Image (tube, rainbow, N blue to C red; front, side, top):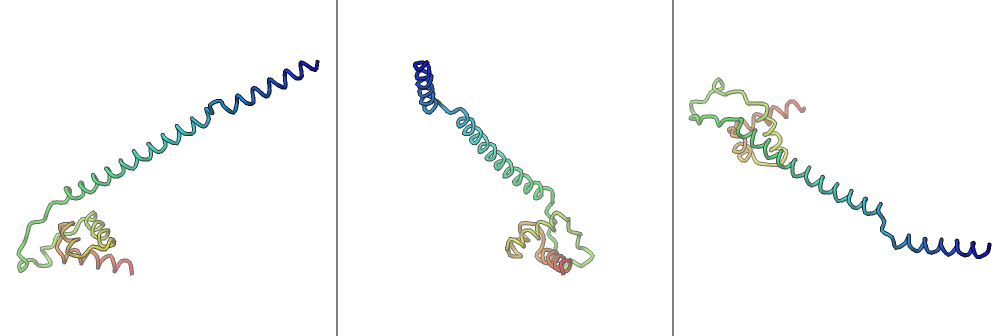
Length: 126
């Protein structure tokens, strides 16, 4: 009877020692899951950057460049309404701290039109 107890006790110790040196499958799964999550997040980040670039190109290509008119012949009746996408682009660039000249070049509007859009937004905000 005592030999059986000693044998079972020694078997338990051997199994305990083996369990410390055995591979931890849960840790491997956690590591694999973490790696997959990082890869997934990198892919999403790249896709978001590409979508942003495509959206910017779409806005630029969607808005035709207005014909150049002589400043002396432009009257208040000749000014075409400004598209809402251009207005939001102007306000976004203005909030980023760009100058009126830079905003006008990027949005293909005149400096006066750019200033008008900003002033309209200020009046709505007040």
